[in-house]
Image (cartoon, rainbow, N blue to C red; front, top):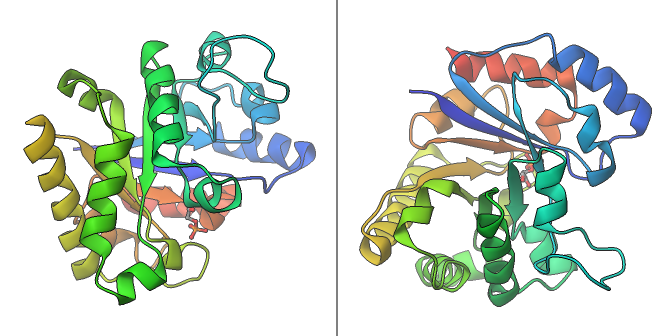
Length: 239
Ligand code: 13P
């Protein structure tokens, strides 16, 4: 079964770096990987190979109108975007995105036939006070409020514990396994349906093999920024 790999390029590359990145990555094809590359909005059209899907890192929930600086799901779909990352912890913390805003963004994407990569995850304080289960349940139930079960096939949940993002400290295989199973059980209980669940947070060449063993794929930040290094990681997942 193919594994999902999301490369979240965040705001990390300049135009010239993206030109190099694309020229390297476009030469590769991974039979057992569903690769989704998520560059900055302004670089999306530079990603032009059929070997991967292209995702955006954010979206606004209105369709068209006086919303200075925003980009809608309809506009993204028009230029060939097939996925949008919604609810990344950087957006929740820096831009105050709530579960209710996230819910509106998910609906806007699904209405425009764009698939959603919904990010959830507890922070360190919540983990230390044994609130992980409650936090994950609330994030899922509020983000997916009113979503039809039939739409779960258009949603990937990315479990990204906040304290593991960008730190070099991924969770252990056992921790990932139990939290992924918990997330899948909430989806099953609420929607009577399955959903792909992937892990993100300091994934690298050393830990990728263990991690993909216990989930449907990985979401990669830092290690996806260097095309050559990312290809090595993709080759490990592809095996
Ligand atoms: P890192 O891989 O840099 O820890 O980032 C993870 C992430 O935020 C992916 O969305």
